[in-house]
Length: 185
Image (cartoon, rainbow, N blue to C red; front, side, top):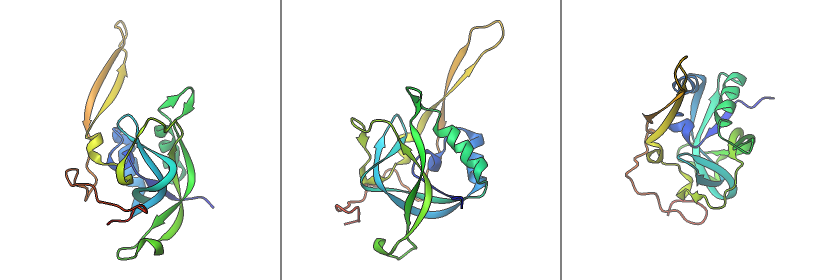
């Protein structure tokens, strides 16, 4: 049975900088609401990475309508950053916890979904507090375009894109205070 669920915690929520991929993602998925996975979120170069560890990573669960074609596009997007010929992210089946409104976390349902895990070294990376990636970190992420015109030298242009905000997330609001289990105090 193929998994038709995807847990997103970073740029897939706030915009990838690729308008075609953003449109395909918007139209090829259905937002099922907030969810979390076990792990630690670290700051990379303007985007987050999920690593195994204690704590929770908060994000949203999506049902994939486009199925395999959308996943192959997302795989190409996540594989764009490489280190030594190895991709920095790997898509793995992961248990995701989903709670209905008013349901306490211990009673949350567990579903299997695809998650993109960071494969690079986590040592030396800044952990993201409370496991929530704020959209303010990516508010002005550079988009690099390369071009070549016959008879001219190659050019590289950097264009800054404004990334859309996550609904309900106020980047100016203080982070919630959490206890050791990741619950609000």
